[in-house]
Image 1 (cartoon, protein in one colour):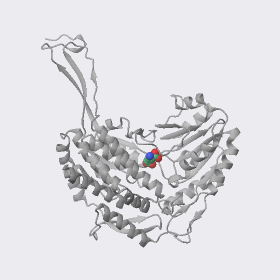
Image 2 (cartoon, protein in one colour):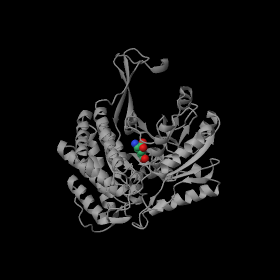
Image 3 (tube, rainbow, N blue to C red):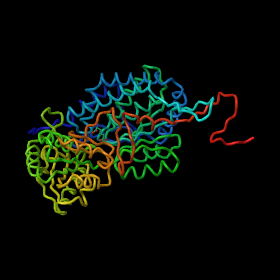
Image 4 (cartoon, rainbow, N blue to C red):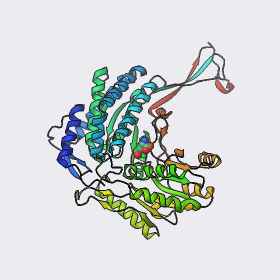
Length: 510
Ligand code: UN1
C-alpha cells in the first residue's frame, strides 16, 4: 500500500508545468480570488482571480455577439474549430490529465480517460457538423413541401461539477459549437486550473481557425456567478451538472424566463445480480463501478441487488476484493482509489454509514481512513460495503462517496421494483446469462433509468450514446446520439409551390 504522497510544493510545480505547456500564465491576482486546491494533500495551490460582475457581463455580451456571427458560419466550417480543439487535446492529454489528478484526485488512468472522453466527443462533434439532419415530411397538400430545419439556439451556459471537471464541459461545448451556439462556462470552484487550461486550448483553437473570439468564455467564481447564467435572458440553454438540490433551483429559475435547461443531476445507481451471472465478471464490474473514482461519479454504483442464493458468495468475493484495494496517491500507478474531494465529503460519507448502521445495516468491508498522519487535511478512505435489510432512509439518497449498499431479492420482479423505487434514475445494470432476464430489465417494465446495461457496471459510459437520466436526475441528455437537438431549435417549414392557396384540413376561406 502506498504510504507516501507528493508534497503540495511538488504538485504546485507539476500544475505550473502543465499550465505553462497549454499556455496559461497565472498572474498574481488582484481583487477577489479563489484558491485552487488539491485533494491529494488538502492544501491550497495558488490563488486564482475570480470573475468580477463587470467581467461576467462582458463575457455574456461577447458570447452573444459572437453567436450572431457563428450561427451563420456553415456547420462543417464550425466543425473545423472543434477539430482543432481535438488536436490540441490530443497534444496536451498528459498535461490535462495531470491537472485532473491534482485538482480532482483521479488516478492516472481515469484522468487520462477523462481527457480521452474529451477527444472522443470532439471527433463525434466534427462528424456531427455535417449531419445536423432535418426531415422532409409528406405534405397533405399538392404542390407543398413540409420540412423541419434545425437552427443554432444561442448562448449555452454550462455549469459543471468537480468530479468530471473537463469531460462534461467538452460534451456540451464540442456539440454546442458544432451546432452554431457559443458557450459561457461556469466550472466548479474546486477545479479552476483545469478549467483555465481547457479555456485556453479552445481560445488557441479559435485563433488558429479564425473563429470569433467570443465563441467561448470562462467564468471563475462561486454560486453568484452561476446565477448570472441562470437568470440572463441571453443564455438560451443552461446545461447544468450537479446535485439534485442545485437542479431544483436552476430548473424553475430558467423556466421562469422561458429559457431551456438540460439537467444532469444525482444518481442512485443499482446493479441486479441474478443466479445465472458470471460472478468473476460481476465482481470486477461491481468493484470498478462502486469504488472507482472513489465513488465520486454520478454513475457510481451505489446499490447492489443480489439474488438470495448467490448473495453470500458474491459479498464474500466483493469484501475480499475491497480488502485488497490500494488507496492512496493517485499518481502512483498501483493506486486504484484516490482521495475524496474534501474532508467535508468524508464527513458526509461517515454520517451516511452511521445512519445506515442505525437503520440496521452492517458494515462488511472498508470505512477506515488512510494517510491521515501524512496528510491530515486530505480525505483518503477505504470504500465501504454495507449490507442493509431494506431500502429505506439513507439508501434512497445519493451520498457522493464510495459506499455500496447490498440488498437481496427472491424474484426478478421484486428486484426490478426495488431497483426503480428510488427518486433518482440515471444508470443501471443487470448481471445475468439469462437472455429473458436481460431483456425484461431493458424493457418498458424494466429499469426506469436513462442508462441500462447488461453485464457491465453502471459507470463508464461511452460518448457515442446519449447520457442522462430520469426522475430526480433531471431528464436531460448530453453527449452522443441525438442529444445535439437540445442545443438547436427546430423550425417547421411549409413551402407552397403550387401557385394556389390550399388550406390545411380542407378549410374553406375567402
Ligand atoms: C459524471 O459523473 O458526471 O459514464 C459523468 C461515466 C462517465 C461520465 C460520468 N463517462 O461514468
